[in-house]
Image (cartoon, rainbow, N blue to C red; front, side, top):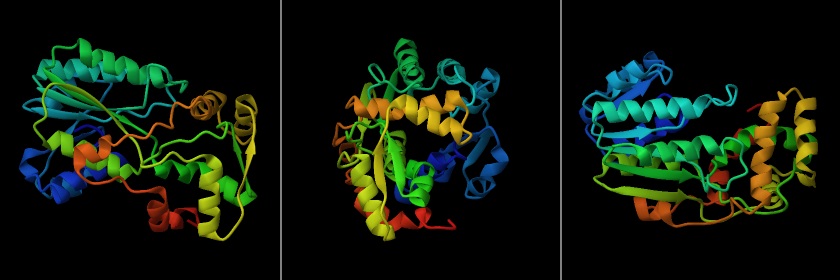
Length: 292
């Protein structure tokens, strides 16, 4: 698996080793910084270096691997880089003889207004055009955990500026997505499949604000704004405009109704119902408390 030292990768490793009890010797965990996985290596997992900007390192990392989890890279600060990296990884997997690739994509990249959706669509197309015998695309909805970046300013001011058009987003916990990825990676599914992994309900920002506010004992009001006004507000607070436009495109896509479809694919894959936002918030409200 790639990206093993990241937040999602760490949870995938947890589910492989502790939930699914996959023998450590069967797992190859890769990272651009393999030293960050010393604790995983100590458990018997093979750790290898893998740099998405170096095809040779990827081919070495994927050598002897039958099933590969390709966790999408995070290159918001380097526009246009992610798709090239992913294409390099797909080509390296093909050269290394990988029989099945599991890829973490996003919902509906064909029609999405999210500015990096073409990266995911292009990766899916690269997999389809490759000679790799099988692949599973996991179209992951946004993490509940992303609220840790979006909400602190709203909690501090009491106002959450949003261009979501009061439409819902069927977000899901990072842990549920990790469980699904681990299950497919450790399984024997062959062929070519696409799953959309959502939480059990689509919530608007207003509904999330009410729930978080109630949990923290304070009021958070959602203030409707245009996408351009949202961008301007982020830029005024120091966010680079290209990054602000990417973040604002999430709202535009939500307003278009592209994030509100609820599926049961997570349950189909894992046999475990995905956690509700209420249950997740009860366990994680501390991340929104002052001083967190």
